[in-house]
Image 1 (cartoon, rainbow, N blue to C red):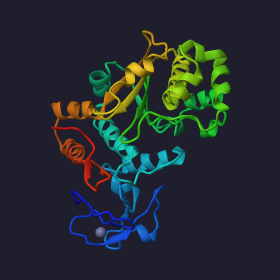
Image 2 (cartoon, rainbow, N blue to C red):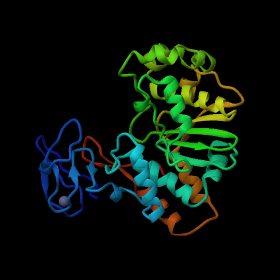
Image 3 (cartoon, rainbow, N blue to C red):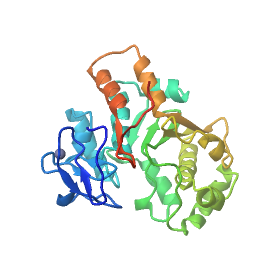
Image 4 (tube, rainbow, N blue to C red):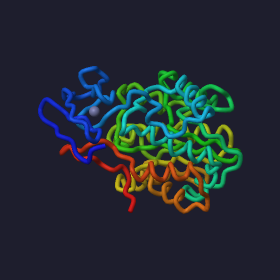
Amino acid sequence: MKESIEITETTVECPVKGCSEKVERQRKDFKREERFKCPKHNIYVSSSTWEYPCELDNLLWKDKADLDLFKKIKTVKRESRIARDNSEDAVTWNVFRFLERNNLINVFLDKVIGVTVQESEVIYWSYSQSQNHSWDMLEKARKEFELVPSKGSEPDIMIAGKNALIIIESKLTASNENEPSNLNVENKYKTSGQGWWNEVFSSDFKTVAIIKKKYELSRFWLLGTWMAKQKDLDFYLVNLVLSEREKDIEAVFKRHIKESQTRRFTRITWEDIYQLIFDLEFSGTDKDMIIKYVRNKTIGYDGNGRLQRAFSIH
Ligand SMILES: [Zn+2]
């Protein structure tokens, strides 16, 4: 891809090196329309990113087992922009599937989060591989807490073990700032689970979810602690971010929650995971591929048309 592209008021240059095609400049929501497509490379282009013709083009692991699993995940996963260069879902899949394929999930949990987990299952976007549908425990929690359970919370990654439940909320270019679109959720969250909110929060819903705009994190904290409690598991809510971003998220969010020996909120970074993989006494094609991927990963173009690297790796 080009290190920089030319952007005018009305046109954007195709980002593929050597390509001189220009397409109409699109604004606001990304659209896959013919007029925004490079006719030579079949990619859809905007001034800040591009989208591959097919979702699989953005995925590293395409063995039969991977493709079967991906297809099944798609049956439960809600929205998907996985074909886009700056897709956090694509990075999540590529990194966690690497760990899982190579039996490194427990090493990751131990070294990066500091938790020892036995017999863990990785649940991608609510899809349970052992149950072949969305994880029953999550469905129970959605029924208990969500106004519209079918549109309820969808953690990027959950790792369910014999002794612990871990929810990983991953962020690449987006921040943790978000608010509920429907304010009626407040009463539902406050009263459900026999007043579970007050068990695990020290601030009220309005403060955390609306004033401090930590709506998503507070849902995962609420539902996650509740699910863990049902099964007597330790619970970890893990916020996975870029090393340069949201360095104060622990201090900010911890002000509003009640942590304990068995309930923790923690921030980790993509770069921590890269370092773990890099340092592993382990070699092979998978490792070469993921190292190269992370080093070269881009997140589209900035306002000046310059290609941005996703990770701070030296
Ligand atoms: Zn092109």
